[in-house]
Amino acid sequence: MARTPLIDRRDFLKAAGAGFAAAMAPSAWAAALDADAVFATAYVRHGGGYGAAVLSEEGKLLYTVDLPDRGHDVTFDPVSRRAVVFPRKPGTIAVAFDHTRRERPATFACPSGRHFYGHGVFSPDGALLYATENDFDNAAGMVGVYDARDGFRRVGEFSTHGVGPHELLLTGDGATLAIANGGIETHPDFGKAKLNLSTMRPSYVLVDRISGDLMEKHELPPKLHQLSIRHMDVDRADTVWFSCQYEGATTDRPPLVGRAARGGELELLDMPEKALNSLHNYIGAMAANRKAGTMAVSSPAGNSYVVFDTASGRVISATDLTEVCGIAPDRAGFMATSGAGAIARPDAQTVSAPGYVWDNHLLRIGGPA
Image (tube, rainbow, N blue to C red; front, side, top):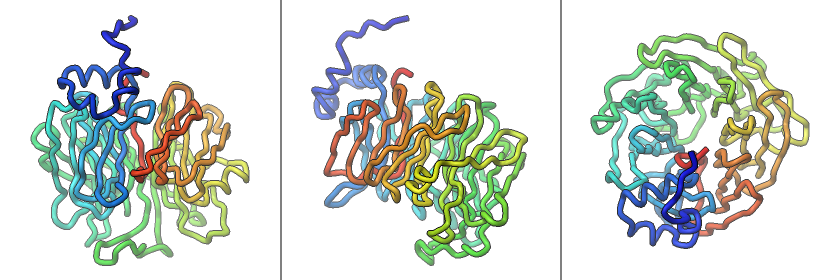
């Protein structure tokens, strides 16, 4: 059924920006946000300071919240309308916020001996939050479980059955977590040093989110043991796609994108040489546009993002954008953000935000499909 808006909210937000919208009553503000696609991302401000932002489809800054440390990814619960932004490793404090301004932002921390890995996901009912974490003294990947209805109180944890977990996501059955174990051992005492590059063993696992039981585990061939599995998304056929960062020789050109069908072996996709070269052995983010049947991967190292057709696995486009990393579905294409402050819309228009360094990930958190 078509909606009859009280005002043309897209034009209103485009003209008014965040300043005017901040003066609206929370109910009106929420209605305005629901009218159009909105996106969340972390950022670094030029001159100092960290935060998370909500952006309009036109690239306008609608909402910001300060962060104690540099952020990485944002996850969103459509039930409570709250988002959580995780710090990049080895951060220990996450921030929950409600971009509709019905609740004040709140912080919560992982326990001693752990740090976040930058990613998390809510249960389908919004009651629990699952976060990838590092048990760094034991070089073990963990999933921390938090009660989202009780101040994000930590209520448990279970193993990721690997080392260096990064992104995790909930599969279509609502009961299974897919986890990308990057395979890289790190410890806060050694800064950003990668401690096991000669012996790393990345893996893709499926875990029961209630029991923590391992359901499937897949490792890459030994010759690709330095291909760190990092990011994932699910296509419209409920197939998990994954993307990688390569820790081997810079002259190598291993495949960087693959698919993982339930019960099957990992499938690494061939790419045209030009498109593969443009990724510089480093994929920083990936996102599915399920309506369009496409999947995008971005490379800030290669200043480009590549789009695949999910049915065939074929590359259909490659686009240059300096320091691009954040990527999210929008209309029939993708919205992208960059470390140079650019916001690239799917209509090929680019908005510049020179005061901001947009961080690695961009998440669509609202608006019509």
